[in-house]
Length: 151
Ligand code: ZN
Image (tube, rainbow, N blue to C red):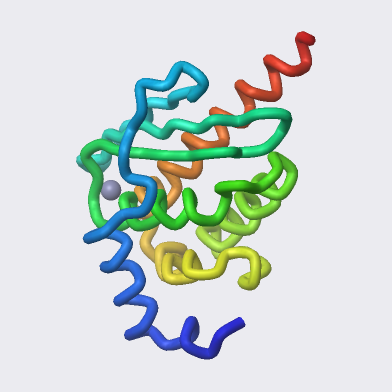
């Protein structure tokens, strides 16, 4: 793990950079994508997360909507982390991320830049913001798995 990712100033910059220039921040009309609409009662967050999952691989993932700094940055980081991964790999990353946000032990090497959100574990009112996009992905993965069970 890079030493840079332990510097609070660097982590703050990473967070703001993902907020200003979010990655994979564009929705598509492509019917091959599934969509999850996620909103929060405690914040302005109201986003759509889309994923194209084929043969157990997350080929593409996108999002857009109204969102605060934390939810935008955390969802942007999520798309970077899971794109191109298998469902099993994405679940492992997701579990580590949720563990970090819950203040439990986690593998920081799996989360890369997303460790910038570690501080949220001490701000109960922001936990929903930091996980809204991730829960969207979780929903899309569950839907994809259900479909494949039926086949
Ligand atoms: Zn928020």
